[in-house]
Amino acid sequence: MCGIVGYIGKGNAQEIILDGLEKLEYRGYDSAGIAIINKSGLKTRKKVGRLSNLANDLKGDPINGDVGIGHTRWATHGAPSDVNSHPHTNMSGSIAVVHNGIIENYRSIKEELVGLGYSFKSETDTEVVAHLIDYYYSGDLLEAVFKAEDRLKGAYALAVIAKDNPDEIVAIRHESPLILGIGEGEYFVASDIPAILKYTNKMVYLENKDTIRLTRNGYKVYGPDRMEVKRDINTIMWDVEAASKEGFEHFMLKEIYQQPKAIDETLFRRLDDDGNIYLENIKITKEDLNNIDRIYIVGCGTAYHAGLIGRYLFQTFLKVNTITDIASEFRYNEHYIDERTLVVVVSQSGETLDTLTALKDAREKGARILSITNVVGSSVSRESNDVFYTWAGPEIAVASTKAYTTQLVAFYMLALHFGRLKGTLEDECYDEILEELKGLSQKVQLTLESVNESSKEVANKIKDNHSLFYLGRGLDYNTALEGALKLKEISYIHTEAFPAGELKHGTIALIEEGTPVIAIATQQGLYDKMVSNIKEVKARGAFVIGVTRHRNRDLEQVCDYTIFIEESFNIFMPLLSVIFPQLLSYHTSLIKGNDVDKPRNLAKSVTVE
Ligand code: M6R
Image (tube, helix red, strand yellow):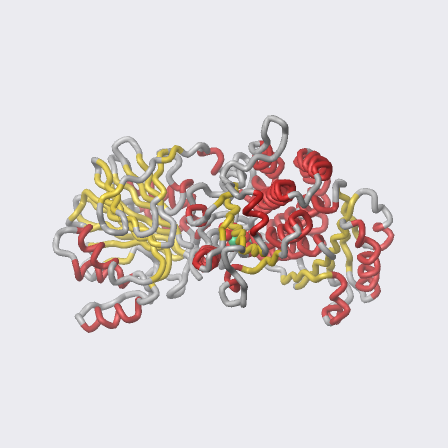
């Protein structure tokens, strides 16, 4: 959470930093601030609320200068306010710091600094860093940052400037993401690629405990031992368009509509000349698979939901006991992890701290780590033995959509490939299932076209409700969970997903006249049971919206409103049935006047525990 940007060069720092912060607002949008060095010193400006508040303020009274840092905040320590906004400075205002992460031992450092006569203005953990650098500063900013860093515990990406060192930015990365951008006579530092992609596509992914010193003439990277190191320069292949709305009203809508393309990118790039699956970054052999006796899948939120479907696929095609767990709970649950365990880590951003921590715990216990992530060079990918990159392109909206469907494609491909390799899936089945998978993006496209209008109609019907239920059985229950999360996070309607058969054990008491219930009924073997469960809630007054395949026309007799979607094998229905819940959440949020792409209290990338 929180986004940081730094710039040094010949350009207008204010403009470049504000532009970068706008692209990072998905990481947090409680407040924003900027610090720039110019001939009259180090100037800081911060404003609570959206970045536009800060931008408007600067419009009337700009800060000139060609070196500076900026921040967009997702509050952790201290409520959103002007004073708690970053950058934070030392008492004289000559050193400014922006921070993404949490300084865990800030209280003890603060006590010590207060004892030394330092006074604090904010309630944040970050302010200690500014005072600590001040304490160690004697003209050499890099040296002072090193000394301050020796005292810090926690997760942090920091960027620092000082009035008396007007030609440099020092930045450091530990557990929170940070990249360096290399332009023509100008250098950038940012939490994520889109912030600076407009200016350069040459990027260095910093490693943990890397420190960088940027000047107008170049940059140096220092490794964890503080010795200078060389890091690879990567050329980013996506263009600025990929990180823009491209005519759509919101990123979320664009990303929903990009799904057919994202699915194809993820799938077709990994087919060999014979049309079979070829996984370039995965070195797991038949022998390795025979040695694996347990699989854990971990992730948070939507990634966790994709993992629930992954579990079904691994158990079906690999015949290996598989457990899917929420990453933030994984380390507290009793698990049996050793060299025979495969841990599959799912994370769009590859930076979610809960997921990263689970990964490291499992690796320490000897597990082999296979990650599914959308971000090349992310922390999760770097810490893994094998990586499956989803090729969804940048996902900017907080509500995850194309990341989810491409994560499902990753699981289909992994399960098919491993099943065949291990011999637990016959060639004939492999061919038949893979053939169907190859045509799925077209079915997603048709579903998108056919359910858009009905999702608007249903959005109008449910928009004023305070609670809503999703029901499903088997794989449909997993879609129900994802649908409920989507609706909660952007429409703010309290939505819960239940296995349809579980209702009668308590939850059915909540159903009253007019309660909306969305019943996903695409799993053919479970269809009749779902119909019975729908009748149960109907009999108690529920307003039921059914989502099923075209062939189940009879569902119209049972539901108040029925959505028909394309046909496929049972295992692929989650890829099709999730489209309606995605569009429904989008339209409900829109009708309610919510900020679709930046829902309240949330951030895209959760880099705190
Ligand atoms: O980047 P990650 O996939 O690790 O993010 C995990 C969750 O924070 C994320 O899926 C979240 O639940 C989404 N906002 C849901 O739409």
